[in-house]
Length: 150
Ligand SMILES: CC(C)(COP(=O)(O)OP(=O)(O)OC[C@H]1O[C@@H](n2cnc3c(N)ncnc32)[C@H](O)[C@@H]1OP(=O)(O)O)[C@@H](O)C(=O)NCCC(=O)NCCS
Image (cartoon, rainbow, N blue to C red; front, side, top):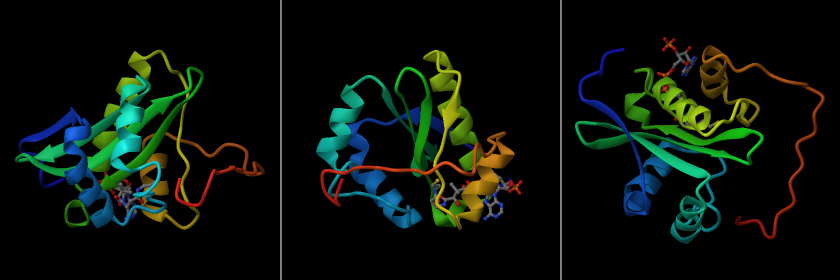
């Protein structure tokens, strides 16, 4: 790790949206739904729900990473983890996961899950390093959507 000075993780709010969406785009986040559930209006609603927490990692005031932590009262989910491509392998992804876990544990959530697209080796390696283990490989992941933007 080389960039540990002035690293700060803080809660993001809708006021941070423009910076956040730019980061997500730079990071090449798979399945970003900028017109759907990652739109400003949608995120605003999610943040108001009380179960969605958005965290950002800043270095010298610049947003270099972000993560979402949410739960359904039984299980927590980590979503939209992203680190700026120019600042990877500095431990920022790991710090963001640890911070998201702290939030969920404080909310009384004992199980945390993440979905990782097949072939995303960096993300898989990171979550495994953080202690996440693959459950039943025979599970089918099904979704039903109102449309292809959400
Ligand atoms: C996945 C991602 C968030 C990792 O962020 P990061 O800040 O580079 O990760 P860290 O520096 O905290 O990595 C911690 C550990 O994870 C593993 N790891 C991370 N990136 C890796 C890579 N490219 N190859 C192999 N292992 C990797 C390593 O074990 C690493 O520890 P080490 O550097 O001491 O070897 C980043 O690559 C990213 O934003 N990718 C694009 C968006 C994305 O795929 N998000 C996840 C969606 S599920």
